[in-house]
Image (tube, rainbow, N blue to C red):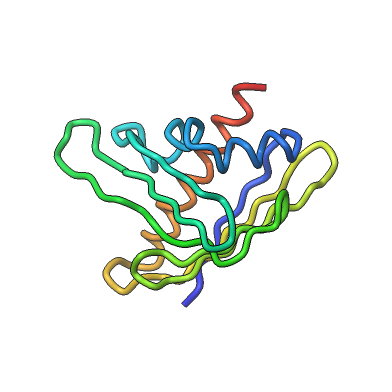
Amino acid sequence: MDITVETTVNAPIEKVWAYWTKPEHIKQWCNASDDWHAPYADNDLRTGGKFKTTMAAKDGSFSFDFEGVYTDVKEYSLIEYVIGDGRKVKITFTDLGDSINIIEVFEAENENPAEMQRGGWQAIIDDFKKYTEASI
């Protein structure tokens, strides 16, 4: 089953792309709630390249690495990858002139309810929007 999350960011595509893909920015927005953070991010943004982001509870009680391999990258428009557990993700960036629409589609995992997964991924993409727009 595929799950979709979406947002529109009021910023130019060059900025949206940089903030989505550069580790120094990923560490600032890649969390689903204020009690989590991303203390580490590495990103080799190219087809065949690998990425890894460590997501951790700020209190130190839990952490995990979100990692995978890029299967297709088209600058300013498309990122596709396979997560370490084999699920596929597709992210499209559409330039609307004054804003960028981002649609992220991912294959659901079987451990958690689909709505819970959608909520977590939506919270992360919402945090990306907030972070990117705040630094305009």
